[in-house]
Length: 204
Ligand SMILES: Nc1nc2c(ncn2[C@@H]2O[C@H](COP(=O)(O)OP(=O)(O)OP(=O)(O)O)[C@@H](O)[C@H]2O)c(=O)[nH]1
Ligand SMILES: [Mg+2]
Image (cartoon, rainbow, N blue to C red; front, side, top):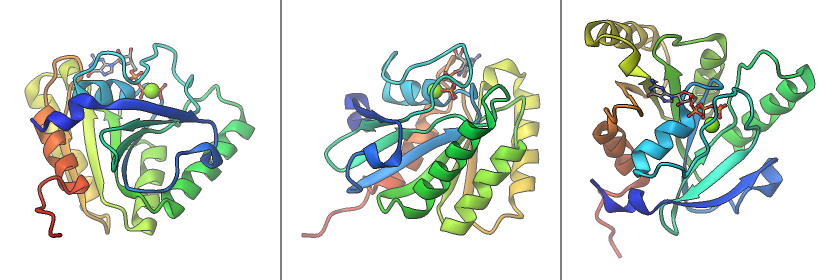
């Protein structure tokens, strides 16, 4: 494993885009439905138990949380979407902020979209796929909580989702994941290494 991930540190929580750190270096953002397992996935891949806050109550976090891997590279835990009890005004704010972030953030290198393997490809998930298409952003999907299904059923869901997404016009990859059992971590590391340019030799 690339030891850099282990050193991830909390940078800040931004209620709005204006409060985000400067638009510099490289960022990879984790998006997904409320309670899907975004924060747990980040903690699992940096091998820290409580870097990102995990909550049993969905819809709590309406902040953009920034974590630095090193001076050039950040992970962003985006606010969860699709939580029914959130008032309409909050939903609209969320929509505007996300669109703005995905469209205008120069540091953004790609989106990791986290889906509960038992509820993949919701209406909001498709909205995110569409935004990535518009912004020409590469997309990687984690089908998480794979521990909740038998391996065969999990694999079937993976194939089904893969087929659905083959219609999309952007580069999409996907994998099984479990923050609980710590499975799929090597795959996500490989992807992050690629997007963050950890594997490329820097020519001075
Ligand atoms: N069984 C199982 N439970 C998980 C897994 N990942 C997350 N959970 C649980 O799912 C719940 C939500 O996890 P979070 O990581 O807080 O989800 P989130 O997407 O960050 O949620 P919001 O911040 O509200 O948008 C928690 O109770 C976690 O313990 C997993 O891989 N397997
Ligand atoms: Mg969270």
